[in-house]
Image (cartoon, rainbow, N blue to C red; front, side):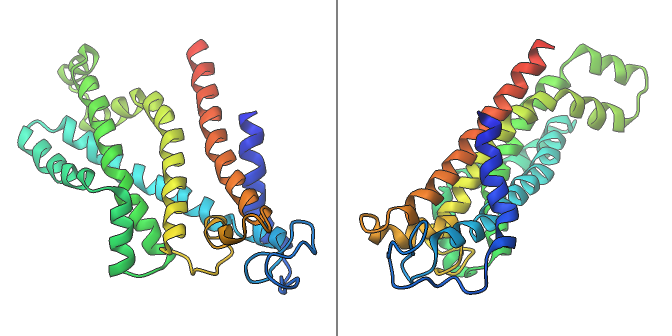
Length: 253
């Protein structure tokens, strides 16, 4: 079930734009004159669905990857550093970022930087990486106190093996458990940002923008809202089911 819920939205998001014609106009707004009808400006809803998933999915994936690329080394260095002042210098600024609601960050960014996909990727990364850093700092602190790591240090193992290789191998399960939740949160943030007008134009072919712009005609043409909303929800739920299944299989093995 999880694989099915993930595969359908991903296929539509990644391959859908190849099957979209240049002219998507099918008549007036919210008309039932095509398979899924038309949207608020008369464009074919099915063509908008095919064209609207790539930004949501790719931005969420890229922002999640950048969050881990920045947050995991940040947390591990903070936990493994011998002078504890380094830990304080690295982690206290993140407490300030965590205190600011993510939607407030999106609104402030929309006001200061304006729309744009690079801005959207940066904002979602900025919102996510403090959580990632704190989670992996906590995991690295537990690893740093293990007798096996102390034995490696006494045997003269290199800094690379004691601070990078061994902690990294030990945190694979933490990474797998966090990835599903983190990617789902990134999808939520990207959809919220598109809903607020950050990252994409207000008339763009984007699943979140479709939900926002077509909700005024929900009772006239519900497919323009229901289909993109269901695809976003299916992708989020499916990702968590897939990661949970993988963790259970790894635990049994």
